[in-house]
Length: 302
Ligand SMILES: Cc1cc2nc3c(=O)[nH]c(=O)nc-3n(C[C@H](O)[C@H](O)[C@H](O)COP(=O)(O)O)c2cc1C
Image 1 (cartoon, protein in one colour):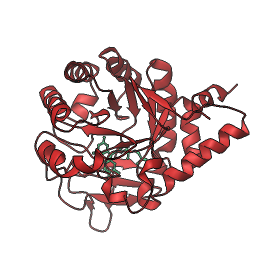
Image 2: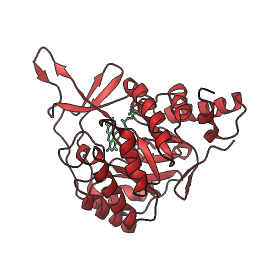
Image 3: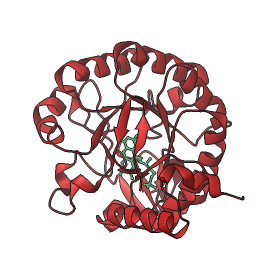
């Protein structure tokens, strides 16, 4: 059975990855699961300087979902290199640094710096965070800005560059094509959906920043439809993200056209979800007499 996935010139051992912001920098889960079984680990966002993030509360549970407004709290590039990199560089799975910034310069200089001081497998550009005032959606919502950021980063690294798309746009395929044209090796779809929860008794929004990003099972059908559309609009691999909590939801993404997956919120509920999903993909392949995970998409609506 061939479970490998090609991202740029890198071969990832299997399609099951863990999503940025839900898996820390890996060491947090070391005691809970065998990290060797993960295909790819996507770190919490790293920015040029450390960021404290937003005021609390930053996370609230919703019906079948989670609304977060972390605000890209992170240790910054130097903290990452000093505190997080030694553990990550010892892992056998592929490791992608999720990079965020306010401007195209921010993305390019952070990737260039990390390439020299803390090189891992590659980068995922978070141009899609809904919880920050600058960068985030103002970049990810504009095909031109996505193209500029991707091109700038492409110019400073030979490692795989993955662009993470936001669903909070009018036509996501336009943004996907812009990233591909600028040299992205793959796309991640999707980041969280903008949402809001109001405490009716207090007549106030629960999150201090008013809105947050919705994730978890509630967003699954949105993500599957997005992957279906995006994977038909580009020829680079698409990594499906959003609401995966077991084999069925994971297989929906693979059938829709995803080459690989990332699991986010479900790690908080069951840290062994990645193992269950991988096992489910293996059983599905044997059941359908397939030999490679890449063949699953061909089964849809045949
Ligand atoms: C608490 C939390 C923090 C997140 N932080 C980041 C982040 O730093 N960078 C990023 O690109 N996505 C971040 N995300 C988005 C996830 O990586 C993922 O795209 C999203 O949660 C949808 O997947 P899920 O439904 O499986 O959680 C975060 C999500 C959550 C729930």
